[in-house]
Image (cartoon, rainbow, N blue to C red):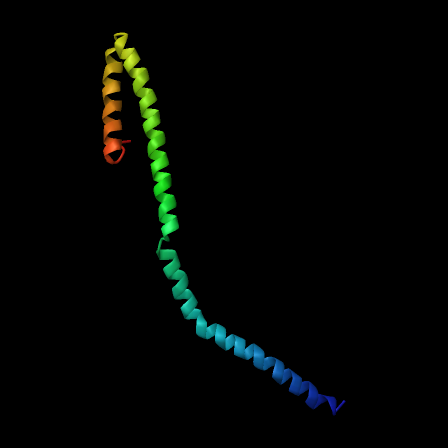
Length: 107
């Protein structure tokens, strides 16, 4: 048993060197990883910007379609003599024009 003790201690020392070295590397690289993660979180990639722009365009086109259908309904009622429908049609037309110019929607 006494002969095995130095061998066990030697093996344990070699094994622990790898653990200690890994821990040192982890501690040294931690600030670099933290800064890198912060930069990634703070910046927008080109593909993310493209996706966002595409989503905005689709939403705008959907809203323009809704406004166009609502305008058609109100114009039909206006032609039937409904004065309120004429006012609503004018408001819808104004919103459509503003949306086409790129102005923010007035909710």
